[in-house]
Image 1: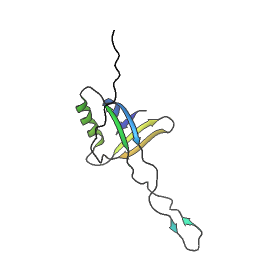
Image 2 (image 1 turned 30 degrees about the horizontal axis):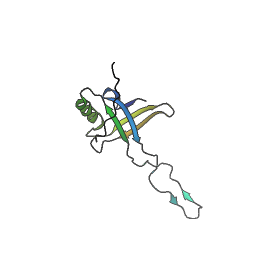
Image 3 (image 1 turned 90 degrees about the vertical axis):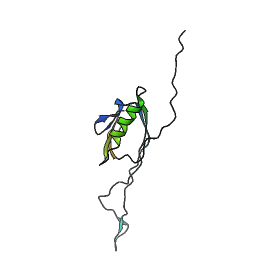
Image 4 (image 1 turned 180 degrees about the vertical axis):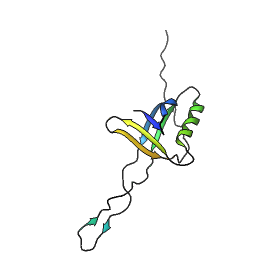
Length: 118
């Protein structure tokens, strides 16, 4: 699965990207009640609600500070949204218009496996 932000590959700065939470597809707005008609009238055009998308990125070990800075530039545009895209084989290409609302939060280090040399 490959990830891009406005066409720039996240893999240039990460060893792995994992999606922890993904927004649903709940729609905004209510259906209207119409007098003398059974049930509700569904408005054909409704917008989706906003949702949080939480990504976990494993930065490249070489010069991690620079890679983090570049990721912040890619995802944290000061004006407008970023097109975050992934190639998901069962679903095809998935695109979400996102904006960075909070700074990156460090998590635990991933365990590194070492091989003993005799």
